[in-house]
Each structure stands twice: as C-alpha cells, then as structure tokens.
Image (cartoon, rainbow, N blue to C red; front, side, top):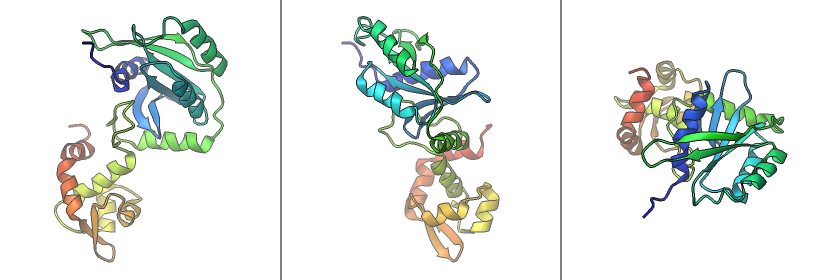
Length: 233
C-alpha cells in the first residue's frame, strides 16, 4: 500500500529550495504555509498542497493582500492529477501572477523542487498585513513549525517570549523590572498582565510567579526553552 503523503512532507524540499538561493525560510506565519525572505527582496509566500485545487488558488489570491510574490507548491506524482491539466494550470497561474513549484518525493531521498513558472510581482494591497507578517517572521526564534501543519498548535514569537519569562520564574517570583532586565523583552508587563496561556500568577503589585500550569509548561517546553536561552549551544 502506498503511504499517504501530507502537505507537511512538501515543506522540507521547498525550504531547502529557497535556502539554496540565500533565503531565510520559516513556516506557518499568520496562515501562510511558508514565508521566505532575502535581504531587501519582496516577501515570498509559498502555499503547499498535494493536489492542485480551487482551494489552493483561493489561498494564493488571499495571500496577495500580504505579498506580491506568491508561489503554489504542488506534489508531482501519479495521483496528483497534474499531468493532464498542467498546461491549463500554468495558463491560470500566469494570469494571476503566481509562480508554480513542483515537488517530487522519491522513495529513497528527501525530495526536490522544480520551478516551472516564475511569479509576476504584484504590489501588496494591505501594507499593514505585510508589515505584521514581516515583524512576526523577524521576531520568531528559529523555525519551530512545519509548513502545512496549521491545524496543530503553533509556536509563535509571542509564545516564545512568554516561555522566556517562564524560564526566569522557574526559581521563584520576580518583579517586572527584574524580568524585563533578564529577558530583554520590552513588553514583559503586557505578557504577564494578559497571561494568555495562564502560566503566571500575581503575587503582589508588579511581582509574579509561575502558576501550576506555568510549572507544567516549564517541563513540557523544556527543550524549547533551552534553545531560546542558549541559541548557539
């Protein structure tokens, strides 16, 4: 029986394809499967699908509000339904300005990408969305998610910053200024007061400790915390 291929299986070859061209690549940022950035070049957004579909096209159209460089990455294989429709797909994507990447996943290798259509740059219609995506990309430490896995809980820059605070509270309560100094986070007070994940408990005015949920999170995310506070080890 042929093993089922998922969108997440396409991510690594696509990531390697753009990294080989000098891009920094991260996944699952504000709904975008893959985001690639290179120097002052426009943001490139890549949407992953195992089959070409209307849903994929609509995702690409939606992303045009964020970036003018959109790629559709599609699995190339006997079950992808590409072969018979490829010329029509190319024609449609050329009209929309989308680039097309074909992802091949051989059984005994990690896969590779073939670009068959360059995207035509379009000016993003919503600069606010574009700036928000760029900010999340730059603030997110590493690439902790896998493209195509939006249905699973994601590691965002905000969550990483909250975990930095968790790390500093493992040995007992601290004041907001102490935590701000230790973490370097200007929005330390906001993270503590909002307490989105329920990880913090207020001991006194401006003083916080870990809640029982926060203690559990320090154990659950121990490896993530280690990488955040020891990025080069």
